[in-house]
Image (tube, rainbow over all chains, first blue to last red; front, side, top):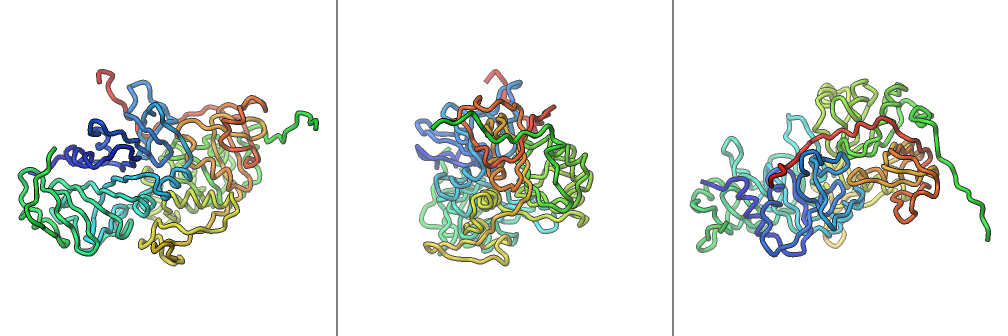
Length: 219
Length: 240
């Protein structure tokens, strides 16, 4: 049994460091905000123009002028600020945002990521994903280890159109925590509780590096 | 030095007067992110005017029955330049049938191409999109060992933006995340039309709080009947 989506988010939250500004993508990444470790202060940036993003508003307190990049109604925390899109992406490109967490359809063992387009299907657009992956110092991908057909999403090279090249540093899936070493491939850092190295090996199509005893995640 | 109280008035009567000079086939910027901070009144006036073959530069394309979706419905849009268009069925239909041209641009690049247009910067290098189909046909150059692609400033005869408050001299103040693309599109438009929820007299806005100086605005009007629709209403229970 692998991790639930919420547990993936919980494991990613352990990577947060005090004082970081963090951009969370849509889906599992959004859940990271629910698991900030005690004693860690971070601020969430949403690329449509807010730092200090808070929780969803109470019913009846929604404000059409206060949304996140997923177009959801949100709140602003004390200390928050609003800004324009060009300033928002200046923060991102200028590496003032320390961590980006986003989902992916595929990741290659050299750190390429594909998460915006499936040939033959309606293209919705890349939004801010290409800017985020091209510039972030730290990128953590949150995703399932395999797709709905059971095929590995960790590949020797991406088959889908790319969002960025050589940019992913860390991946947290329902089965494992992996680091991307652009020379060697996916380095297995941790296993999900009860998941064996063999199962991870079987479900990783790209190069997998297993060094010594791989510990279980602590959640 | 003594100077009389003087300012350059940008005020026009209404949305219909504000779209004067807009012609078929023009490239037009529309501020907003999703349905947040969009120029609702100007979109309505363009629909009424019936301008066709518009190339739109906008982060999104509205939803089926609101925002730019209204102009898609009436087939007034020839081409859409946007970063994300996933919220609109009519858009999808027109795109798949080939009626609508679509150019997808990374969001930060879209914003910077607007800013550059308004700031007299013809082109710039950005790492966004390097190694992807966005980079196809574009010049690549390495800076500090990292590859970047050359992107050009937009050229837009008209920009339609929406602010919370504005004064008669065209100074603008935004609220919350409704600011988004509005300031840099205001800079970029040769004729920038600002609609505001509250049009005030000159002197009523504190100069310290002005987000867009009036120099970037050619026309301003008091908007009416703002719907300010919410795309994704997400709330939490009070019991928490």
